[in-house]
Amino acid sequence: MKEHYRVLRFLNYPRFWLSGPATLIVSLVVMLAMAAWFPPGAGNVNNIIMPLVMFPLIWAVLFFYTYLTRQMHQAWWILSGLLILNSAVLAWQFWGQP
Picture 1 (cartoon, helix red, strand yellow):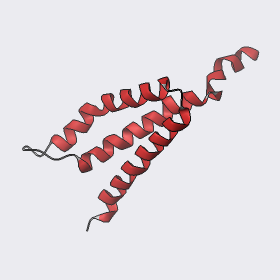
Picture 2: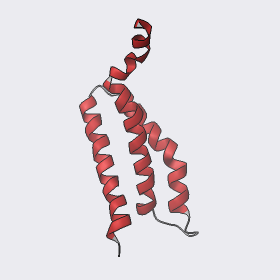
Picture 3: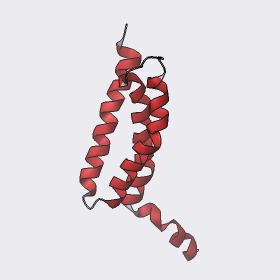
């Protein structure tokens, strides 16, 4: 029974939650919102293709920043700000336009 708790010990670390699920959720929201603010381009597909292509880069930048930072409260604020800003873009895109 003690080994079971030792295996799940990583769930108690805030850095796991910051670099894991929080980074993934924020990356997905940024990618979804990117289709709204990225220009469509000549073929009218750049705003669809570019977020898909850039998703690994967005995730990697956020992941390595949150994993390597010493100021975790600042990383939480940055992720929260990105989430709120891009959620507002998505809300405006779906509900704000006539």
